[in-house]
Length: 92
Length: 92
Length: 92
Image 1 (cartoon, one colour):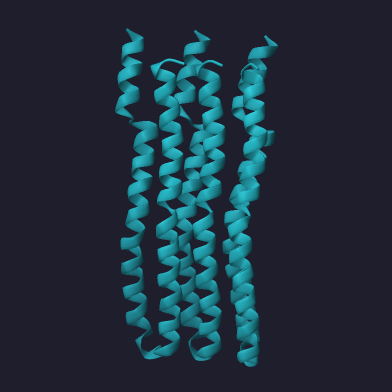
Image 2 (cartoon, each protein chain N blue to C red):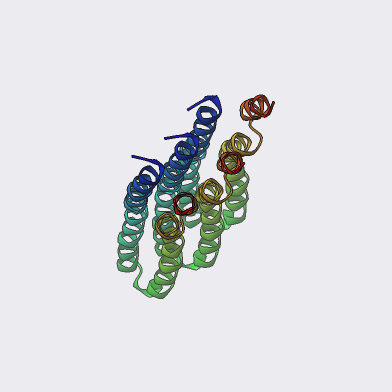
């Protein structure tokens, strides 16, 4: 097990953990907001349009935290500078 | 156990953990939203159409976090650049 | 213990854990939604048809997260590219 193997293994494991743990909170948060929005529509049907619009703009913001994790995961897999360095060094 | 074995093992274990833990929160969040939607329909049957539409658009957003994990899992199994590098190195 | 044994062991353990832990949350989420659906039908019997339809479409969405785990498990067992590589290498 040399540097290349170590860096590769760490990248794989971290990539998986990043998107995994990173998606827990957004999913729970969005689920909670969605549930509350439906209760609000039932309570105040005249405001359904307003509630729905606020819900989706808000969910997009919550979703952004999941997207950050997704981007970092893709960077770790496909554009990892540490990996690139050791590959270059191993090549010559 | 060389680099290839190590990378392969890490990929398999990480792939499994990613989709496993990554599906917990979306499932719980969607379940909660769905339960609330049914209560909302029972409270305000006239708004059933509005509530259902909001529910399914919202659930699609929550589902997206599970899909991120699924995509990363498939990448780790079938398009793993670290694995590809070591296979190529082992081949020649 | 060489690479083949290691990869085989990791695949088996991960396959089991994936479907096991991956089915916890969908089952809980669907159970919660179903329980709420029954309460909702009891509250508003006239809407039973609407509630049931929403319930089953929603449960299908929640079920999809369990299906992701199932697919990954089957891939790890029957179409594992890491295992295929080492088997081929051991063959010649």
